[in-house]
Image 1 (cartoon, rainbow, N blue to C red):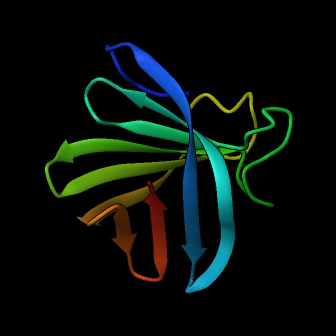
Image 2 (cartoon, rainbow, N blue to C red; image 1 turned 180 degrees about the vertical axis):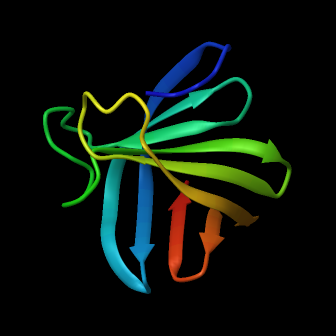
Length: 103
């Protein structure tokens, strides 16, 4: 699930997600990137959630150093839950103790 008007390309990526400073995912994930630079991260096995509490996560670029991050609890979750605005630092988007990194 990704809000984008451009085409998307799925690829395997290295993903690292921390929540409240604790690692909740570290490994290969499926990264679906739009031509706008926004992307969605999901489990390589699309039948399984990315983490215990998230089916997938979307990073929607707003500016060069900011993005709106949304978490999707199930595969049928069309709206997701806003995790607020994250700041970009290198390959990561960070807000407080939550960090989403991909390369």
